[in-house]
Length: 95
Image 1: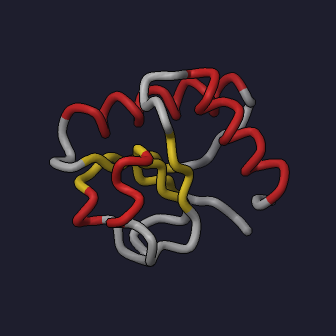
Image 2: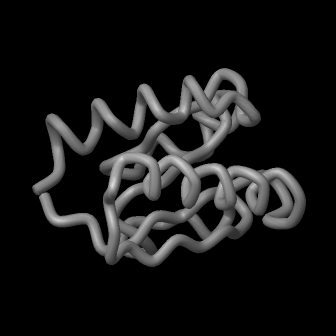
């Protein structure tokens, strides 16, 4: 699966989704993964087709069960958790 876009979501689409977006950018840079648009928004905007991959806190799992590719974070500020999950995703699921 080719990933062209990642949407980071939180309840309101402001604070924590922006933080996750910045962390995703850091981790992708560290993993030397480029060419992906990263946006942040509220979980209500997380619909199939809005992005190729969604990154959300595990507390929002009930709101994103209809999405095909989601990474759930137990701790949205944990760079090691995010790196582990993104690395695994890109090694298994993405081109």
